[in-house]
Amino acid sequence: MEKNDHILPKDFPELKNDTFLRAARGEEVEHVPVWCMRQAGRYLPEFREFRAGKDFFQTCRSPEDCCELTLQPLRRFPFDAAIIFSDILVVPQALGMDVQMLAGKGPTFPEPLKEPDDLQRLRKKVDVASELGYVFRAITLTRHKLEGKVPLIGFSGAPWTLMSYMIEGGGSTTHSKAKRWLYRHPEASHVLLKRLTDIIVEYLVGQVKAGAQALQVFESHAGCLGPVEFKEFALPYLKDIACRVKDGLKEEGLDNIPMVVFAKDGHYALEDLSQSHYEVVGLDWTIDPRAARNRTGGKVSLQGNMDPCALYATKECISEIVKSMVEAFGTRGYIANLGHGLYPDMDPESVGAFVEAVHAHSRRLLNH
Ligand code: CP3
Image (cartoon, rainbow, N blue to C red; front, side):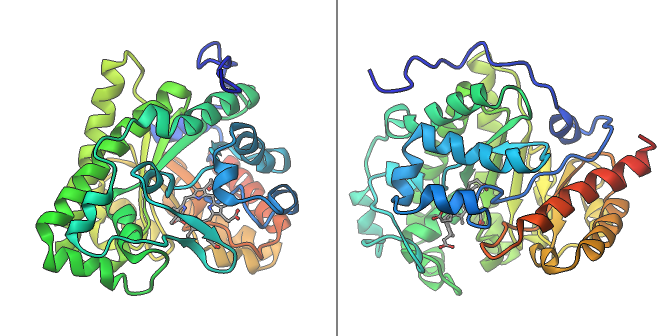
């Protein structure tokens, strides 16, 4: 028996702060809920200390370590949600690809996919429960250890974003190797995107079964596509994921949970994203909040979108920026966040100022 196998996804502590879940469903709240992408990260000295000398993906495979890193930011700040510490690249690993996290370089695939024939190298059948069971165990353990303080968000990378990593072999500015596949090998691209979608659906349902109370799908590389390519190679799979996860939960006898889609730099697709069966659309900072409300027609809740770099400003300035942002989005159907993740050189005190400003300005607007 593996460690933690005795910790079961049942008898979870009662949820004390459901503000995030209510905002996701467009219900009334006392304050606007707030969390930050990469809230567990290198900007926290305790994170750097804990991770020192350990391999990144080894850490991801330890439910105890993931639990500790998920909880760290919540000990400092009154965030309204926790996000499980893991990474989107555990899915390509489950397909049999080697992925390493190299200091100063970021995620690296020593043998990326080069031509469609390379798809043969991927595992034909992925047993999600055994390949990614460590993420499920991390979620169950963290759900217990959170003691119902706030809801726990699970996540996955979206098919196009994962495909681009698998072909590029790491970070890229142009994504030209991956985009070459879209133009030169559209059929093989769809084969790969479909394989990823099937695994992601099972992976996300498994996360909810393990205790995740909301899910976010990261389409981090939406920005390198145009509207036509997005409609063909990203949107259908994002929609398929939302619909099939919801069906999967029903089949398992689980309650529906809110799903967030975050397509970074995908402003051109905002209307489509708001009709793709997600309860929440996450926004980066290049979108004006009022324009986003108009273009999504009140059909979805919105999440975002302060420029992370605004955290380099003074506390007073952060408070002013947050005030305008909350007024522009409005307090209903709104979850405050940054437009992308926190950077390692950011000051934890500025993060505290951001969270406090969201709570204070929204309470004032709501007369609470
Ligand atoms: O707090 C959280 O947000 C939860 C944990 C989380 C991580 N990665 C931990 C992490 C989440 C949600 C992710 C998602 C992720 N991973 C995305 C999608 C979000 C986005 O940023 O658009 C992407 C593209 C990745 C791939 C990845 N992993 C990158 C680009 C990097 C940074 C590499 C670098 O050197 O800057 C990582 C590493 C990573 N994932 C870190 C953390 C906290 C930092 C490295 C470390 O801890 O050693």
